[in-house]
Length: 249
Length: 308
Ligand SMILES: Cc1cc2nc3c(=O)[nH]c(=O)nc-3n(C[C@H](O)[C@H](O)[C@H](O)COP(=O)(O)OP(=O)(O)OC[C@H]3O[C@@H](n4cnc5c(N)ncnc54)[C@H](O)[C@@H]3O)c2cc1C
Ligand SMILES: Cc1cc2nc3c(=O)[nH]c(=O)nc-3n(C[C@H](O)[C@H](O)[C@H](O)COP(=O)(O)OP(=O)(O)OC[C@H]3O[C@@H](n4cnc5c(N)ncnc54)[C@H](O)[C@@H]3O)c2cc1C
Image: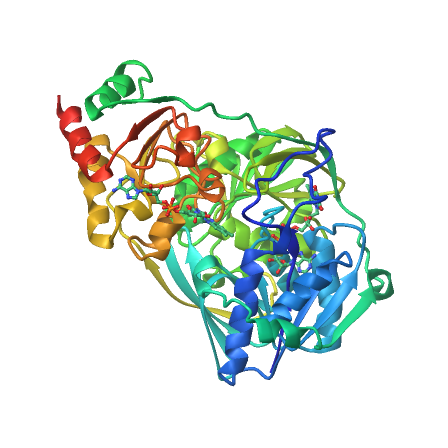
């Protein structure tokens, strides 16, 4: 069984994003970029399934600029077997990403696609569900536990009021939530090994997918900043302020 | 123009967040709602103020809001609507993007403000930026943040209920089980007051130090990711970029440092209080009132002070 894991290169989660002065977007030039944290979890889960013998190969794919190669190498250092870069200068929306991934699924024939539940830049939380819809596959989103057995995958999902389990026929889509696993750090020898693993580059145009954006960015603005308030000396003082100044209790 | 709202439910109740989706949809036109489950849920939907028609997907395959059948139904019903709306909760985020893909539409998640029928404001980068986006799609598929729209009144309406037939969909998924935490406390997303604890709470047992305070304030209890990951509290209490987004009148953070991912979930609260023993903790930069000190001393003192 083959597993496909889409990974996205995003602004590192430790960096506080800055809106560009002209309001056209968020500054990404010269900013540290890393693998989307949810995608690290997705890669880890796929690699563990292979290590357990439930899968035979883990293929990672990224849709993006040339530098997304670094992200793919990181995924291979974590244990993925090979990588595909779909090269584009645009920042495709989830609908376009899902269409590209559908083409790759048709080409690669995986039994499972494990994605991150959301990318921490655009926070769309959409790509996995959209790919599942386009393929007509089952979807186990926001997964906190994944078990593959007898041609099905049992997924525990984090929902608003607790947890639920769904069982899906393979092939299927899973999207990783934070508590699915704790991703490993790539060791130096594995980082070296990853440099020699196969990485295929496909120009996005070759896939014949309509990637035209449907959303236009009118503007990107900083939210109104909260101002730091005052420090108080005691609980009594705090209760007094909440009652008489803020009037919230 | 008419909008279709997918009303999500849990434990036999329409989720409060869905009532906020009704308010958002009313800004776009006439409001029809789609609800699954038993007839009692459809009746509850018909009483929501501002709803002019209830579509009841009574077929058992929809009862658990499984994405595969429900997205197919939403996509087929969408033919008659300009907008499809749901609350940005677990169901909306699971079902609507799939329905959008079936419609060849790019969904617009987490809307916090509606500019006009095709223009919406949504936070990106954990709320560090607000993007105003205009959709070129013929239909708009959006999820909306309940913290940004008042809930529609649950009573007062009397909309007619129409049962809708099931549609074809791939039979690839099965609901197995659900575990809901039964809390007597108010719902985190709609509570007036939220009392939250972080890693500083120390353990599952010590987390209960917040209970008397939450009781005294009638507050919901929330948590940081570190508190959830450490097993102090269940995951559904997580507030933040990847947890619940809350905007109560009063948010009190105990032993929470204030990472941007946590702030993303609570910084729109009206009044923020932080108690932390580290005077440099970033949470103080957004707090209206702060106390530098040991939370295990401050919390009981607060409970005492509230009694006066
Ligand atoms: C309103 C708006 C503003 C934007 N602003 C900017 C901007 O300022 N700068 C900029 O560079 N881009 C911008 N983009 C494009 C953006 O970076 C994203 O590529 C796109 O919106 C996908 O959303 P997401 O990554 O949040 O998807 P999600 O659905 O949250 O991603 C879920 C998962 O899908 C997979 N995935 C998603 N994208 C890829 C990919 N490209 N390759 C491989 N796997 C993937 C990953 O597994 C990921 O965890 C913008 C897009 C929109 C709609
Ligand atoms: C992709 C991604 C998504 C994330 N999503 C979320 C999210 O949705 N929500 C979220 O919360 N986090 C999220 N995080 C995690 C986030 O980055 C922080 O790690 C987390 O919020 C820290 O939790 P904390 O403040 O409880 O713990 P810490 O940062 O460890 O802070 C503990 C605080 O408690 C104080 N303290 C300790 N003991 C006491 C005491 N006795 N009295 C008073 N103060 C005390 C300390 O001074 C410290 O400031 C995410 C991270 C990533 C990478």
